[in-house]
Amino acid sequence: MSTTTRRPRRRSRLLVLPAVLLLSAVLSSCSVVEDLTNGTDDGATPTAEPTTSATTAYYDSQFTRDGTFQSHIDMAGLDFVYTLYPTKSTPRTNEWYPLGNKYFSFTFQAYDLDQDLRAPFNTKRKVFLGRIQVTSTTTRSDGGPSESPYSLDADAKTITLDPEPLGNSYGMLITSPKGSFELRNQQINPTDPATIGIDLTFTATVRMESSPGSNRFVEQTITQKVPIAIFPSDEPTVAQEIPVNAN
Image 1 (spheres, helix red, strand yellow):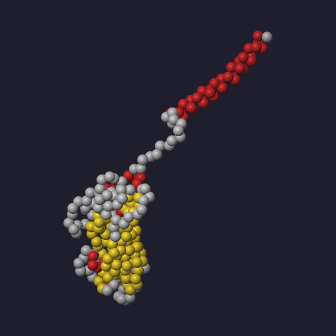
Image 2: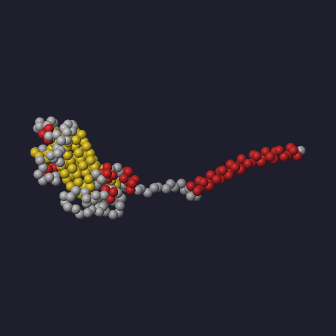
Image 3: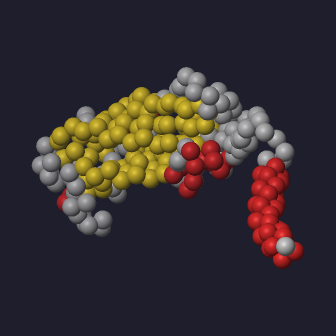
C-alpha cells in the first residue's frame, strides 16, 4: 500500500514542474514587453522629427550637394552645357533658407563633338543663342501652393556679361571657344517658410549649323531643370555684399 501511494506523488511532482516553468516564462515575457513599452498600452508609436539630412535626401539636388551643377545635352553631336554655381554673396548652399535672397550665376555654351577641342574654329559648327528663358517653381513641406522666386525672359546678347558678343540676326555665338553666354549674381527671392525645394527650368532657343561653313541652320530649344534644396530655418539666408560682376 505504501509503495503504491508514493509513486503517484512522484509523477505528480514531475507533471507540476513543467507547468511552473511555463508560467515563469510567460511572466518573464510580460515583464520584457512592459519594459519595451514603458508600461503603456495606448498603442502610440513615436514619430521621428525631420532632420536637415532627411530634407536633403528627400529633395535631391546636385547643385546643393556639390556646390555646382553642370549638365551635358547631346543634340546632333553638339554638346550643350549648362553650368550653375552659387556666388560669393551666398556661397554655402547648405545655408540656403526660405527667407532672404539667394544668388547664383550660370553659363551656357556649345561644343562640336565631331571635332577635337583644339581643332581650328572654322572646322566647327556654329551655334547662336537667341532667347534665354528661366522659370521657377517651389515645393513646400505643407503641400501649399507653388511660388515663382526667379524668372528670366530676354534676348541673350543684350544681357550676357560680354558687352560685345559675336553674333548675327540669329543671336549671339556660343560655340566654344569663341563664344559663351554668361550671367552673374542672379537673385532668387524669399519664399514661404515651408519651402523645401526650388526648381529652376532653363530654356534656350538656339540655331545650330547643319555642317561647318554651310550657313544652313536648324532651330532647337535646349531645356534643363535644376533642383535646389532649401533648408528649414526661422532665420533668413545671409547675403554678403560683393562687386556687381564678382563670381
